[in-house]
Image 1 (tube, rainbow, N blue to C red):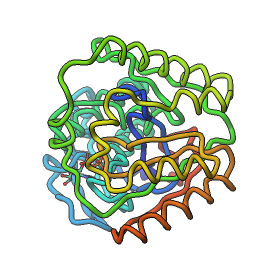
Image 2: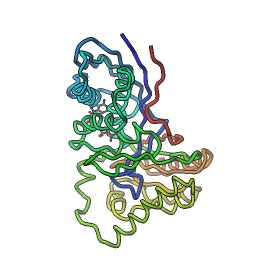
Image 3: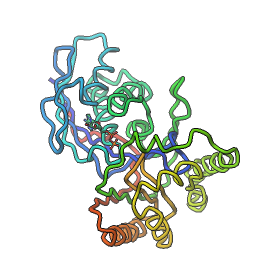
Image 4: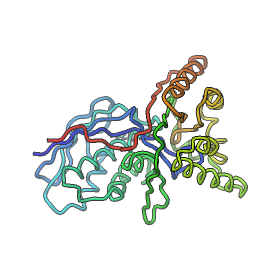
Length: 309
Ligand code: ADP
């Protein structure tokens, strides 16, 4: 029997102007998973620690992602899975994606790495289909590739890994309120004005160039969303105040993480990210809503192996 223990990161999808195409990985929070090979073509989830999630493989995103991977494996092999969950489901920091991505990266290692990262993303996306109804890759891509990613196209699946500057830190606040992904989708307009589209693709290009050149000013100027944020942010208490005061404290910029309710801010260096954390806490204490705050360096590796035997 072979066994592997991995770290599966939380991820921030959308990244302001990069709605539905960009994302990045975190070091904190993240889940841990243990996978063992078994001589049967099946997936057995034996333990879930942290949150109440289904043990039935067909109802757990990790199980669904692994079954999708196994459908392309000829040998008679399967997996036993333990999930140690730290990322709250529904928080907007890729809880389901961490389980799907972690499971397939670990399985690929156990099998001697027959699959490419893009193949793994394809399998993990089946987990996202279970969680949200659509097989999207905005959280899966950064969880598997690490750092910042761009999902350029789905047909064919084309995921681009973007260089990540060394000093980038994220501060993410998760207000303890529920924003349903379906509601967050529902309120979006179906059409976009050409002038807004032009501003948005200017910013996406600017953000990618800024990341690749480690040009923090350009990253800051480009972290703007002319299309989705003005509408969605009304679902998140004190959103504008958090953004404004974080920027006054030196943050480069930020926006809604995934479909919310989490808000992320990016900073150059940990000291500024710490100041942003204090500001977020102060604002939410005043508003009177419970919250969690995570501070993390942008994780360049994605899923990490902790041990193997
Ligand atoms: P997030 O926005 O943090 O990514 P999602 O809303 O996408 O969270 O996914 C959470 C949904 O997926 C919940 O309905 C949860 O029950 C379901 N789910 C199934 N398996 C898992 C798992 N292993 N980890 C997290 N969520 C899971």
